Amino acid sequence: MLPTPYIKCDYDKVYEPSEDSFLVLDSLEKDISFLNERFQNQLAIVGEIGPGSGIVTTFMMKNGVPSKSTSLYFALDISPWALEATKETAKLNECSEKDSYLEVIQSDLTTSLRKKQVDILVFNPPYVPAEDVPEVPSTREETDQWLDLALLGGKDGMVITQKVIDQLDYILSPKGVAYILFCARNKPEELVAKVMETQPWNVELVEHRKAGWEVLSVYRFSRSNESII
Ligand SMILES: C[S@@+](CC[C@H](N)C(=O)[O-])C[C@H]1O[C@@H](n2cnc3c(N)ncnc32)[C@H](O)[C@@H]1O
Image (cartoon, rainbow, N blue to C red; front, side):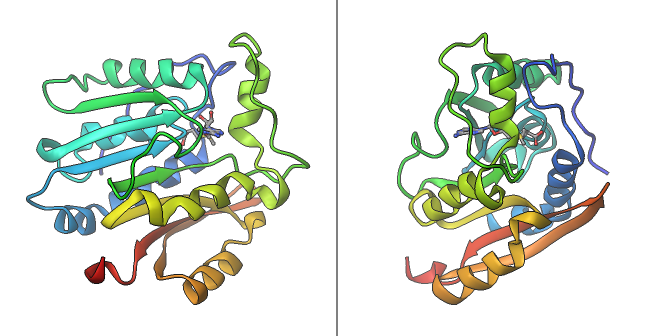
C-alpha cells in the first residue's frame, strides 16, 4: 500500500482532505501498473487541477506516479492559499527538486495549459450541487469564499467539471489520461454514456465508494482513437 502524505494545513483556508481525496489516491494506486506501462521510457507531464492541500500531487510525486525519475509535475489552483499549501505539503514530505520537479501555478482551470501536452491529469472538482458557482473572491483574506469555491459546483455540481471535460481533447497528449471524481448527484453514468456516444473517448470507472450518504466515483478518460492523432 502506497503511503499517504503527511499534511499540516490551515483548514480555514484550504479544503481538508476527505473521503473524495482518499478515493482519488486509491484510484491512482489501483491504476499504477496501467500508468507505468503506458508511460514507460518517456518523460511524462503529470498534473492536478485544484490541488487544495496538495495531498494528491504530493502522493504522485512521493510515490512516483507514473515513474519517479521520468515525470514533471504541475499543480494549478485558483486559490492562492491552495498554491501555498501545495508547496508546503511537497516540502514537508521531502519531495525535493533533486527527485522530482513541481511547478505550482495560479490558474483558472486549464487556461494556463498548452495544446496536447498533459499525459496524466487529476481533478477532484468542486462537485456539490448549488444554485451557482461562487464568484472568485477579490482578496486573499476572504477565506470563507475561497473555501466555497472548493466545494460548490453549480447546477448538478457539474458546471466546473464540465468545463474541464470540454477541454480534455485540447490539453491531453495523444496517450493522455484524466482521472476525475464525481458524486452520485453529478449523474456520472449519464455523462459517461453521452461522452462515449458522441466523442472519441473511453471512460472507465476506476473506483467507487459510499461515503456517508454520498456515493463517490473516479472515472478514467482516455482517447479511443489515440493511434490516429
Ligand atoms: C474539492 S477541492 C480538492 C482539493 C484536493 N485536490 C483534494 O483532493 O483534497 C477542489 C479544489 O479546486 C480548486 N478550484 C475551484 N475552482 C477552481 C478553478 N476555477 N480553477 C482552479 N482551481 C479551482 C479549489 O480551490 C480547491 O482547491
